[in-house]
Image 1 (tube, rainbow, N blue to C red):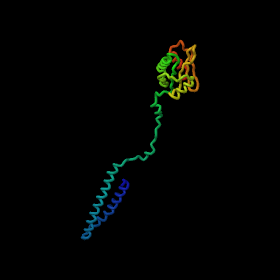
Image 2 (spheres, rainbow, N blue to C red):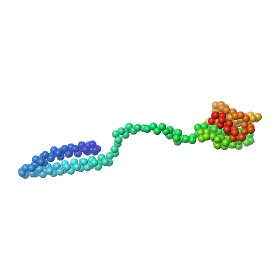
Image 3 (spheres, one colour):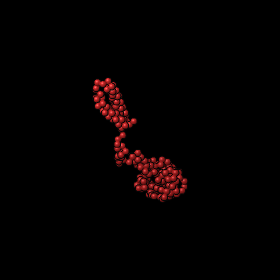
Image 4 (cartoon, rainbow, N blue to C red):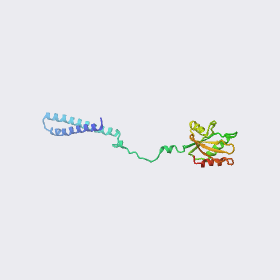
Length: 202
């Protein structure tokens, strides 16, 4: 029984009690029958008082255990904190990935590895350089960049231009060759890496 119905029941019983009070008061004559009726009404009234009191006590106990639900709980306002939590938890994730193709020649792998190490020291967190040189076959720079994209998720591929007279490097995407360096024959790998970063490609 809910609190509303318990309260209504108690109110009805209380009304009965109030109506019975005049009857009790009227039973004060000297007749034996009247005395018996008065006693019976007294017992009935006491019973009504006990029942009414019990209902009120039960109502108080149960109402304290009931969960109070705010009237406007369905209309909770959502506050915009203006914080992009996706960006907050993915900070430091590289935006650009770069790989170095194995250079031609006997020392091609070691030279490519040296360039990777220098680039890792010089680039910011938004650029990720693949840790090992990629041996992508003998295709064109664009074909090797396509393989690097499909199999390694690489955005740009650094390669050595095939030129027997001067040392040139380039940056390729699957679509085209984006940039070619000046002659690096006399430059250290640090200067070469700086020229890559000045290219504006990444």
